[in-house]
Image (tube, rainbow, N blue to C red; front, top):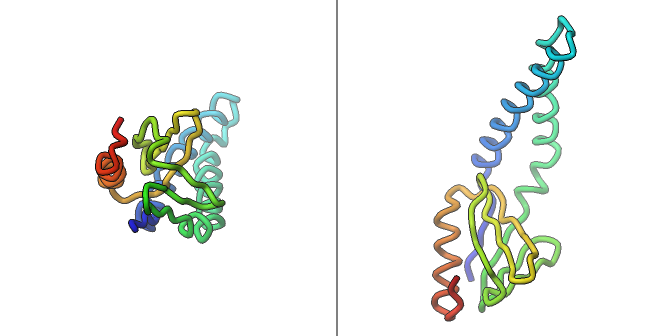
Length: 131
């Protein structure tokens, strides 16, 4: 059995990046509205993402995926058969699983998304289920 656990450093780095984007967007929107206090977008964006990150950290870092006997099992009783995978790709710090029926699942906050993809694809190859 292989376990794909979220990485705390990747979680924090992802939220830092989201914070920078939120700060820029918040400042830009307030500036375009003509408000002379556009700098408050920096504070608001940083605070919003920091609060979100703090609030969801325990839950998000508890979401583990396992791969055993041709099945990927994730949080909320998600189950994806390797034979049902149409595509496996990375999106930022997450690995996206796309099934033949179009369902999409994320294995979030992976320190090395390519290593996770390689492990899944190796298991698919070993079972004869390649892309």
